[in-house]
Length: 131
Image (cartoon, rainbow, N blue to C red; front, side):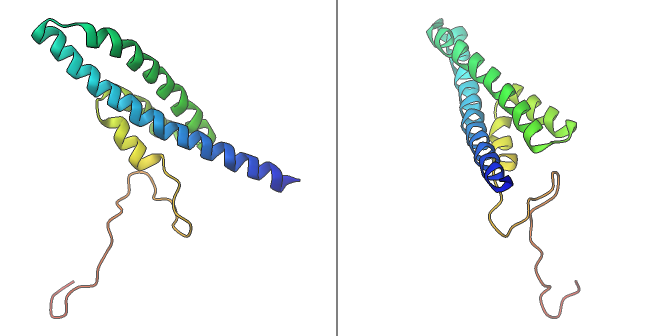
């Protein structure tokens, strides 16, 4: 019986992760579009874009925050990582970085990279050179 429960948990985790990826990208994109619309509003006097994009971005912002909290609880993120993910919502391109770095399942056989560590590979030194 535990295997069935574990399968449901894995499916739920994958669904939450997929939703987080979509909302993260949508929130970041809506923020950038809202910045453009705000520039047009004050530069050319056309407030229509802000009237449309403002509420859309507001809804995506709230959804992003709710999903990040749910994901942080589900994956048992440390408080610092949770606060960084939430803080990313107020920077125009930061949710793209959160999506790229923290919202992907590692490929089979590859352990997850710890937060803050580099993913650069090391290579053997060239013969005749000091390491």
